[in-house]
Image 1 (cartoon, helix red, strand yellow):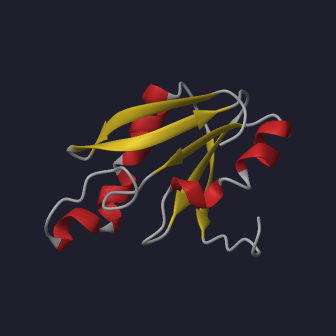
Image 2: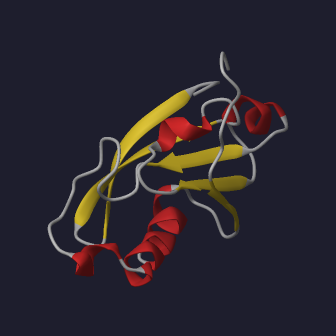
Image 3: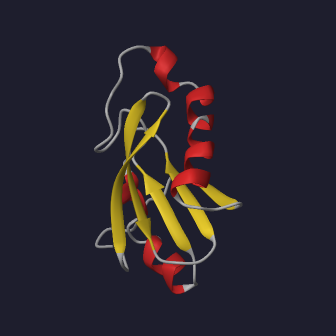
Length: 109
């Protein structure tokens, strides 16, 4: 991740998620799909930081450095929604822009 980064273990939904904060400014939260990790966004973060955003990227439950709880009940959309109040507290933001998706860099990026 680019810029000055801070890595946190943020408690959300009963587990501690691995989170990286980078940059300053309005908050953009980057969410990856399965089975990726926050490193999916490594080529995107520098551009967002350069544009003046504070980027929040996390390892979703069961991915990257976040724990893998047993059972399907731990992976529903209701668990994802539990993250929202955590950002408001941990990041100190009243508004966020959320980006979810898959980013497939070209070979060599």
